[in-house]
Length: 332
Image (cartoon, rainbow, N blue to C red; front, top):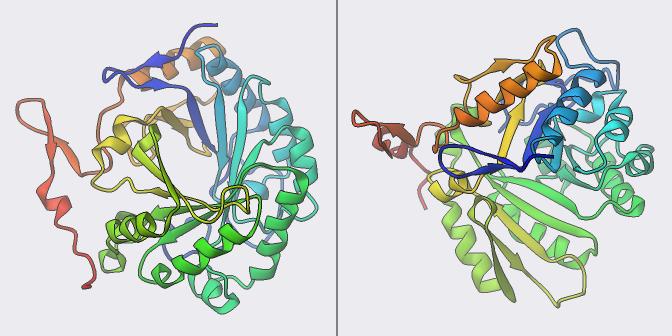
């Protein structure tokens, strides 16, 4: 097995993030809204989605390049009826994780764990049913709580709660931190709101203030190299989860400088960055050799920027995009 491929900026690609579907049974206000509240439930892949064979073939190829982790996402990946099959057929050398809204974890969490799922992120933006419904446009709050419990009981570790921080949810951060500190097996991942997904920059909040508040509240702070993330540990060590991590890619050069992942869309397009759509390469009905060539090309084509906050200047160097950085935030 070859070592990991590195791009021109020295970043080794050791992980892949695969969207299995763009369908979702929620319609979260901060999202791209592709799912539009699809309530049909788990089903076979649609014509425009990769089959289980497509996914596994790609993973087997990139395993040969030293890729050792895969995260399955959507849309809502649990709307794929063949999810357990895909996970079971994933190469044993890879750590397998998933991001889900949790509504289908009751009744499936144990099977997913048995198939090879190691850990899970569950989207939970509030601890109150009405607040939750306002953000997700869903009445599935209790089902999500059941899903989180099912994941913990199944032995998935860790179970991370994903919370997007913006004007609708900023007031809930403190109680979410206390919630994970009081419940063993849970961790919290606070995700910076990205205005370009919704076209509503007025929903933005200063994520730096959340960092400052956590730094004062935490008993211990660790620095994680991947994406330049900080981890805040709240509460007595060994009592409950208590770990809070902030994912803040906007205006954060270090976030991209330490990124070792490439992405695959549900249609089977490979791309070097979640937020780029100008480097899409279709894997279609490719042979393994062709997939390998495509993977190499995508890694070689990676650039050191997130979205539009770094742009290439006339001299070929990357510089800050003042227009993008001018995105307004709400008043204090």
